Image (cartoon, rainbow, N blue to C red; front, side, top):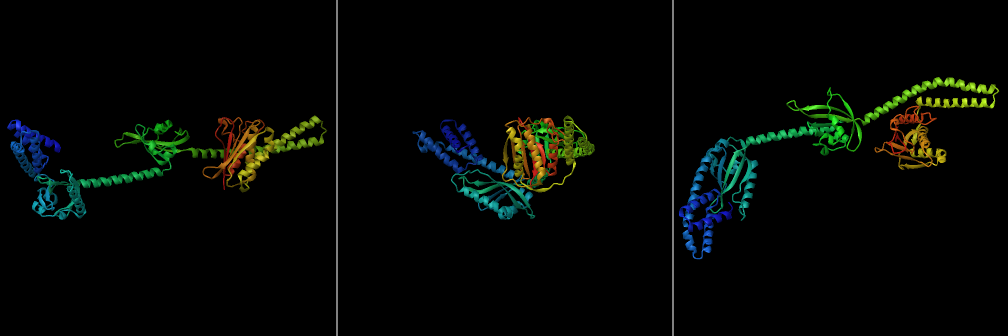
Length: 571
C-alpha cells in the first residue's frame, strides 16, 4: 500500500465511524491496524495520520469543531492501535520461534554495533554459544578480508539515513567471511535492514546470515572448470587455425558449426558469415563436402564454384561425428585447395612431355639427317656432272631447297632436344621488347599493324640468356602478326606480378583466338593450326622459359583474339 492509499483508507474509516455501526468500524480498524504493523508503518506515523484525518473531517463538516471530531474518532484509533500492538506481539513471538529453529543466524545489533540478539543457530555454524556470540564485536567476528568491506557498506547506509527522502524498508545484501570459534572461517551471505522506532528512526540493524561455503566451493569449482574449458577451447582454436588445411564441421542439418582460418581463406568467407548458416549458402557445390565414402580416409576431389564465382579444385576427406550415445551428430571435413598442386602437376607433365617429345624427335632427326645429307650431296653431283635443261635444273633446285628446309627443321629439333647452357646476363626486359618490335617493322608495315605498348618504367632487371629470350618474344610477336588483319592492333603489356618476383609480359592479338580444347595443346611439339607451320615455335618458347625458371600460358579467353602470358623471374 502507498502512503496516500493508507491515508485515504483511514480517513474513510473515521468518516464511517460517524455514520456506520460501531461493530463494523471497530472490525475495520482492527484489520487496518494489523496491516499497518505488517507493512512496518511506525506508530508515530499513525498518530500523525490520525491528526491529519481529524482535520479533514472538521473541514468537510462545518457544524463539527475540531474537538468534536477528535472525541468522535477516539474509538477507531484505540481499536487500531490495540490491533497493531497485538499483531506486533504475535509477530514478535513468531519471530522468536522461527529465529530459534532456523539454520540461518538471525541477529540484531544496536547503532553502536553491539549485539542485542543472536539466534541459537550460531552455535551450529560458527561454534559459539548465544552468550559467547553476544559478547563478540563485529571486528572480532569478521575476517580481515571482509571487515573493511562491511564498514564501507555501513557508511553508505548511514549516509542514506541522513537524507530526507529514503526507502525506510530497504534491504542490503552482502557476502562476508566470518571467523569460527575453532579458528577456521566460513563464507556467508547476509540480508540486513535497519530496525526502526515508532517515529521511523533507525535504532539498530536486523540481519539474517546463512552459510554459503558449499555454494562458494561449487562456484570455485565451476570457475576452474570454465577456465579449463576456455583454455581447451583456446588451445583447439589455435590448433585449428595453425592447420595448413581447411577444417569444416557441420551439424546434422548441414549448418556450419566450425570453420578454421585456412578454411575461410579457401572458401572466401569469414567466421561471422559462415557459422550458423547452411553450407549450401556459401555455395551449392559445397554440399559435396558432406559426402561420406568408405573407407573413411579416402580422399575425394571436386570442382567447386564459390560465391565470388571462382572455380577451384578441392581435395577433401569427410568423416561422421557421433555424440556420446553413438548417434550421428554431424560431419567433419578436412579440405585443401588443389589449384597450386594441379598447376605443379601440369608443369611436371609439361616438362616430362617436352622431354619425351625431345627424345623421340632427337632420335628421328639423327635417323633422317644421314640419308638427307646423301640426297643433298647427290643433287649437287648430278647438277655439276649432267647436262640438264632449264626444267630439269628447276626441278633439282626445288628438291635441293626442300632438303635444306628439312635440314633446318632437323637442326631445330636437335636444338630442342639439346640441353643448352644459358648465357645469363643482367637484362632489361622492356629494352628487349622494344628491340623485337623494331626487328619486325618489316612485317608490321605491309599490313599496317599498330603496336600499343604498356611497359612498366621501374621494371627491375632479370638474369637471362638475351638471345634465347629474344627468340621467345620474336616467336610470339610474329605469331600475332600472322593472325592479325590489316589495320589491327597488337597490345604488349609488361609489368611486375603482385609478389614482385616475376616480370609478366602479355602479347594480345585480335585474331580468331584459340578454341578451348586447343589451349593446352598449343605448346605441344609439332602442334599447329597454320598451314606451312612446323608447330615448333611455341614448344621451343616454353622449353626456353622453363629453363629460365619461368613459364608461358594462354591468358583468359576474350571475345576475339588470343593472349599469351610470359613469366620470367626477376633478379
